[in-house]
Length: 549
Length: 72
Image 1 (tube, rainbow over the protein chains, first blue to last red):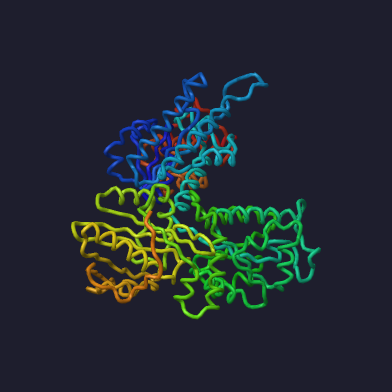
Image 2 (cartoon, rainbow over the protein chains, first blue to last red):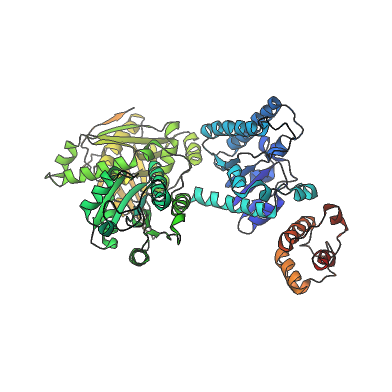
């Protein structure tokens, strides 16, 4: 990873620590961060960092300033510098720290410390800045310092000896936090948390202790489980699906979920509930099929080591987390799971509605089993597709789809929000997106088609669709609508490629079905296609109309 | 003393054979001014001693560091 650290204090020791596993840019002199942000050196530009961390020390930032207003102005300026850097490095992740100001000023005991006011001012400004710049992210330095305690994190001696504000411990904690941040931002978010019930969501065994005997309450050990459920509920709100896989009688489980006064999680919070006496491995495989998700999207939490080992062996793609030895650490374990496997920098509208959408999908599948032809079924769904060129507010969702979609993905090119902007800025490049709804509900933005034009020719650079809406011939309708638009512009032929991955078999023959002509297949099984737009289509199924917005 | 040198060798990431109490500041590339600060902090932390900031400039050899942990 290529990282640049910019700071207003000497962080050479941090750079040294990070250099063991990364390529780290070395800012000339320290305190030069403003110059680098306003007018980056050629050195920084040619280094071409993947991530830039702007780590600001509060005391150093406000050194020599003695009025609150002046301090606020200084902070507003600093935020502008960060924004400037972010616009110059639009395809780089820029992490900006919040600031900690150690209280040093000697003041009367009853006066509220001005440092608190200033730290909060910075947080508000930074929050706006993050909101307005998709490539600026938060680095929560203040939280890190709070967790260490200032007396551990700072070192007066290091400061007076070498202008290094932090202790050796503090620097090593900072290096770990930076690595964790990068890891979180670059790894793929898991989608589903599979939960056991007995001694995981509540204390005790339902089958033995009964409805009134299980432990879940607001105080003492029952509070462990209540807090655990609170944390899990927060995770669900961030777009993670919850499922139960438990050896229990289903009716007993539903009784607790629906009626127990202390339960935080209720039946509706779970996308699927497998409470039966079948093996957990079988249940998880069924779950994956029902949700149409790969096993590598699942994280499994169970207090029973035998069950964990069985899942680990039979389904190595599933992430099996260690259960804490002391159950007092269970709520904290959920927080760690959230950071490690379910990190999201920002949430999209689709994230928030996800459980609901998957539940609708399961209903749809149930409806499918009751009708004869697939076409009849699809027509009965009253599918509506709205097609448009990507708007800025859809950027996060589109980036997320390119990063997460594995199955229905023709070439599997991943884009960050910044890279999408770069793509779209090129003349003759277009990003089309489709949102889909039907009589069961709204699936949101689920289809992305990236096309570059060149005279009377066009090329499909990316084509992908969320697996939630697979099998409904949405792609047929979208492609037909986009081709019509291209024809109006005078385009006569479209080229496309299929690049095989381990997971995108569902689209292996998609382009053939869409009446694209196979031109060649190379040694890596990459298929190249062309379609002459005046040619009639014989295979695609356009079952519903697409509306342009 | 061997333990002390081993500890410093780990911090400086050098072979312990290359260090002795006579090793001088800046006589090996790893022991630069930044490392000097780090050694002060690491010794204070590990041995629970204090090396007053005004005495730091007088430390010229590893033996000078060793005095702080052997006297007390």
